[in-house]
Image (spheres, helix red, strand yellow):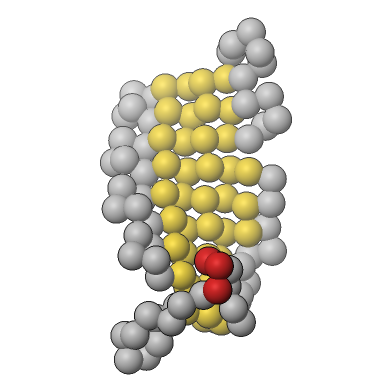
Length: 99
């Protein structure tokens, strides 16, 4: 525990878990993945740059390094993909998802 109230634990497998004073948690895994637990969502960042976000309501968003974005509802149904069935990237205005 640090003076500011934050905590850091390092495990035998070299996993690092940090918790700040707001209770927000960051995990750094030995395989290079990082996971962030924040109010309202959890995000995992993979070494290839892919980000997977799971929101409190169960919906999911995956952002790929190439700019592709996929969104699923809480049942796991695909509701948005910036790449169509022909493999053509469909742009989103201002980086925002267009449903």
